[in-house]
Amino acid sequence: MSGARRAMVVLSVVAATVLSACGGDGDAGFAGYSRSPAPQVGDVTLPRADGSGEVAFRAPDGGLLLVYFGYTNCPDFCPTTLADLKVALNRLGDAAADVDVAMVTVDPDRDLPILDDYIQSFFADGIALGSADPTVLTAATEPFGVSYLVTDNDAGGTDVAHSTQLYAVDDTGALVLTWPFGIETQELTDDIGDLLAGLRP
Image (tube, rainbow, N blue to C red):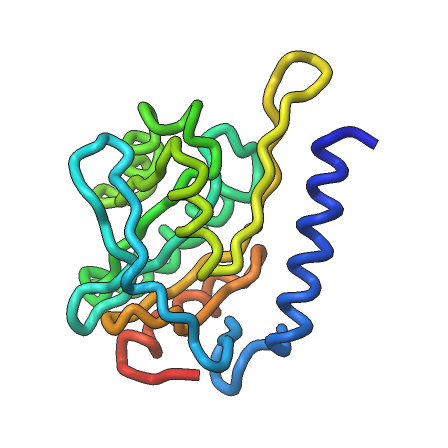
């Protein structure tokens, strides 16, 4: 079994465990799921990919911060999730102005110089975050429950495996909702709208 396949098997088991522990079928009224108690991530920070400062995982007052952990060379999960999120936010209309989107790279060695361009190709004000320091990156991923593994393959390239969830953080720094990969775009739109209206799982 290749390193990439082993990594995906490990991540699949981790994801299944998380979903099982949290119910996985969504909370009443929401397509995403929550954790109880909600993890507090507002004191966690990461540098901007361009080195211009630190960003805390906390939404602006009355808004939401949507966070995705991935990498720019991802062939499927990352671009699909970001494209679906773009559609969902477009459907929200003016309400989407209260939503910030951040992408954290789990492949910083390759991504840091280009991550701004990547996320901003989906969202004009998208926030690109990452660190080449593994300790700093791990400190940011752990509160979210994110798993990732970067390995060298036999062809001399790089394989990356990572969790594929999308996370919603509110203005108190609480991780209030998590969406699994493949959620219907309209369900995502409805959930974001409900969160912006002050509803919680």
